[in-house]
Amino acid sequence: MLEKLTKARNLSKANNAIKRLISERGESNALSMADDVVNNYRKLAKDQHVSFFTFLFEKLNPEADAVLKAAQNFVADSSARNYIQLQKVSESPRQEFFRRLNRASHGTAAVVQMRRDLLQLLDKKPELAAVDFDMRHLLSSWFNPGFLKMHQVDWKSPAEVLEKLIQHEAVHAIDGWDDLRRRLQPDRRCFAFFHPQLPSEPLIFVEVALLPEIPTVITPLVDKKAETVDQVSQYKVAVFYSISNCEPGLRGVSMGN
Image (cartoon, rainbow, N blue to C red; front, side, top):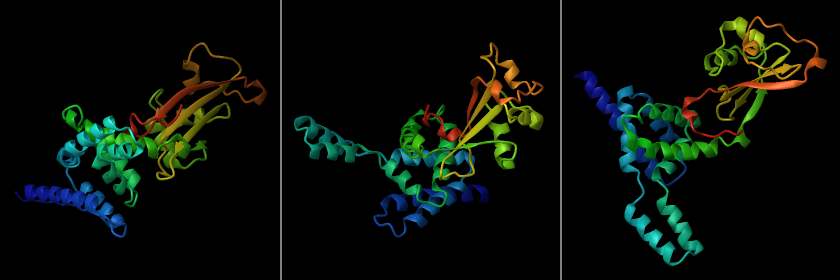
């Protein structure tokens, strides 16, 4: 009984925090209110995430009558004024909610985490795709390729980055540290892409092999016992053999070609 009461109280606090954040008109309290939403969300049990996102879906939709009126006005007169009004009323209030949430301490990471949780619910709750659409729309702007920073990964890179490379390699699994060491030898290159708001979280890993000629099969490139080509003069071909996305919360968000 006590557990149920605690869960219900936490969900009520989370929903009230959403209301306060979206209704705030000034900037002075925006940071603390955004932090309040994040902190209350993190107190929710996993089975309460669906209620949290359902609240966003049901309470933060555009006003249908206002959208219809603005659309009719724009059809009748495609002026700049009517166009701007149509854009204003048709945008989901959820997008403004997530913009404000992004002001929280580590807000970008929190939004990405929320979307990671949301994606796990879509199969059983397809109506929540509207919430996902709004999140993906904003994340596509926040994670524009122009914001990403590329860093080369080598054996001297921080251990946490190397561990994440092993963990997130999605194309050709890395079989422990010996396998990783081979992939970071002089005839191999590995690059990680980072976002300024997630400085310690690699978003993408790209692995490259430098070879004397174009290979006919991929197997030797990922063989941890393969001989190293040490002579730089022998490097004639760069083969991109693995690109891995490390963050499930950014699925479907384009970060460049």
